[in-house]
Image (cartoon, rainbow, N blue to C red):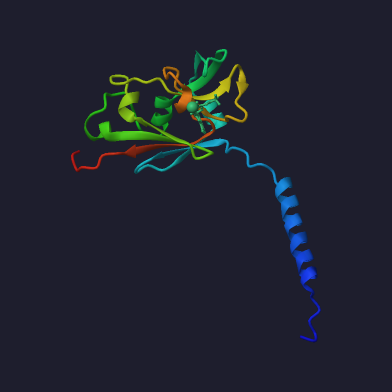
Length: 178
Ligand SMILES: Nc1nc2c(c(=O)[nH]1)N[C@H]1C(S)=C(S)[C@@H](COP(=O)(O)O)O[C@H]1N2
Ligand SMILES: [Mo]
């Protein structure tokens, strides 16, 4: 005990200093930016990464829509079915059999998730219009972007997923019926 040089208050000081340094560092740390790519994931196929440039090169549609009774915005985006086609999942022919049990799961940077039955996107079935939007009123989406879903027919915007990070096509079939 005789060679003990650290006093309890000294230790407290060091710990307090460390905490303050950590807090200062945390405050300075840049807020993580939303990733500028969407991961496209389909079972049995290699995952694809779609960036703003690749999306911008695809055909766009314009839709006027508003959420929460706000003034309407002009949205520009790519049809979700065109995005799925990039992943090798085509809705060009009517879905049959096991494909009717597939679903599309969209995940956001805040871990929010929404699913659509693949059949609801099939033009011969539900034909729900879903766009992957990259511009609103002529500008890139900032905090809600860079990519957001728009489902113009929905009565409230709960499926208008902000800051989409991945789109997965999931085989939801649980029986061995083909
Ligand atoms: N990533 C993400 N997207 C989201 C949500 C969310 O919590 N996270 N909430 C949804 C819900 S419930 C609504 S009503 C709308 C709200 O969109 P707004 O903030 O543009 O009005 O965003 C939808 N998209
Ligand atoms: Mo909501």
